[in-house]
Image 1 (cartoon, rainbow, N blue to C red):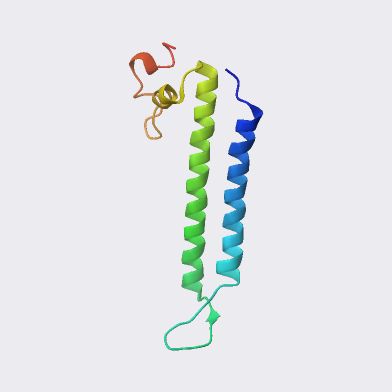
Image 2 (image 1 turned 30 degrees about the vertical axis):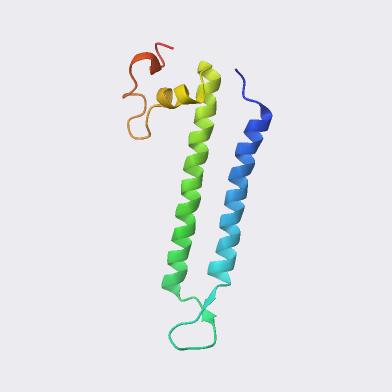
Length: 112
């Protein structure tokens, strides 16, 4: 089973959109962001600890999106290589923590 170019492009374009959204959020919230501290009525630029926290949050969200992208791409490759359904591909893939060491029985790549 080969992976269609449409499926690949949908996956890659989704990741590109997510990264572009992260970049625009950084621009809007961190570089141009303003807030009202205390009783001050005039918006002031974000303070450094807040900028750092927002940047870290955006980075972690982008990292989570990348992890999901890698998992989906790996599942497509497993489905293509072993010609199995998505449900079976999840068993063949193993886990992030143990890799293929915890895959036994019909899901073991050596048996397939």
